[in-house]
Length: 496
Ligand SMILES: Cc1cc2nc3c(=O)[nH]c(=O)nc-3n(C[C@H](O)[C@H](O)[C@H](O)COP(=O)(O)OP(=O)(O)OC[C@H]3O[C@@H](n4cnc5c(N)ncnc54)[C@H](O)[C@@H]3O)c2cc1C
Image 1 (cartoon, helix red, strand yellow):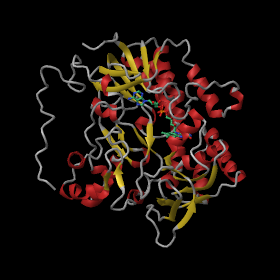
Image 2 (image 1 turned 90 degrees about the vertical axis):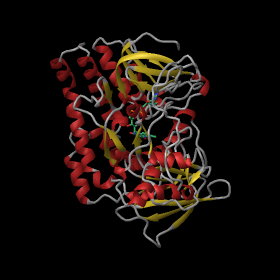
Image 3 (image 1 turned 135 degrees about the vertical axis):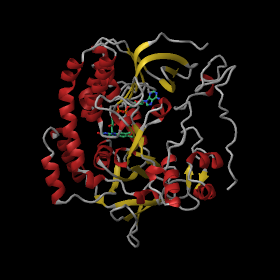
Image 4 (image 1 turned 60 degrees about the vertical axis):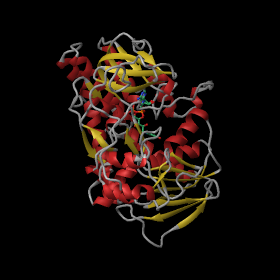
């Protein structure tokens, strides 16, 4: 048998704002809580701390995000939460969860309840030249800047959409990057938008003040912010040297004759985020589709219970709505786990969640007010040329996918034919693009294209951590008896 930890009342996956908040609230109610995160420090995406080897000698010199994140992380001190860093949760099977710490052998943990708060990742967008060195996602660049204090080049073009397209170029400018231009795919705000935003301002002063501050930073740093434009292609000999961008219509489809070229050595791309669903899918949760919340979004009740008994979901992983929403959702999910475990009464949980619910309603009113500005247009998924790489792990080009897609609208079969989505990222980068190609070819809405079947390990870990023949588990490794179904049999399909 693999080394087996004692069981726990609650395992929280994810040490970002949602996971920290969930763990803190459940522990305060008397639950025995384990919090696992694969990163070396807590904080998640937004409150990412400087990496190992860095010491912050003057917190006052860091930005407000760092300080707020630090206080959130410090709030776990004395909470009794068992924090496990560098620990990837690689599979879920009922109440059994498999953890890999520092690449060591997988450990099994039996968790009576699970709060899944795995966050989100950049919405991947493929266009000619997107695999050239020098093209980087907002999340990648943010990680370099926040954890290593490194910028990847001299002259940067930012192309993206949503709040990140305002915040990110301003933050990068603050880190010393030379941002040549920032492109926002959505439309410029009109007086009607400002009116809607003003009506939703109650309870959102901090967010609106931040937005105004970021706009002022762009103006101060003379970074032009151009609306209604997307990147069309990146060009260069061995690395990005130029980027072509163009104006788009309301569906983000390129308007012919509007192309412009700019010389840069970094292209940072940030068209919003998609929720990390892998563990929720392995757990068997139900999903709905809302592109603006990140595509497939786990179905939950008002206590953030998923459709699977004992499994809760919170934060960006349950729909991308930002860090303040993540904190309040985590709090509610932590209370719900405590309430369902009998550690707190329904009345007390309702009272303890009331303020968070009020804040969530106000945040969602603000999100609704900005919907016209930040709606994701389908045109962004129509940029790849025939020879554009779609699955970068397995080097599968659009033309390699075409015959498979012509023969089937089943993404699992397309994956089996072409290997797109079988690499280390397990389709996190290419799956949305492949779904868009299938939807377009078969004339169906993208939400009707089912997701590929998730496979463990859901996070990249050394194979040595899993290659333990003593681990008996239908989803991790089989030993001795199999579960019956022959997963290794090739699909019965006609060759495309
Ligand atoms: C790339 C990116 C950039 C962003 N930039 C900004 C910004 O500039 N300003 C802003 O206001 N908001 C930004 N956001 C949004 C903000 O970061 C999120 O709203 C907020 O962090 C959500 O909190 P969370 O706890 O839900 O998820 P996260 O903060 O993403 O935390 C999730 C945590 O789960 C861990 N995890 C995931 N899966 C596993 C697993 N299987 N095993 C172990 N650990 C796991 C991850 O390591 C991560 O630490 C950004 C989001 C992303 C994805």
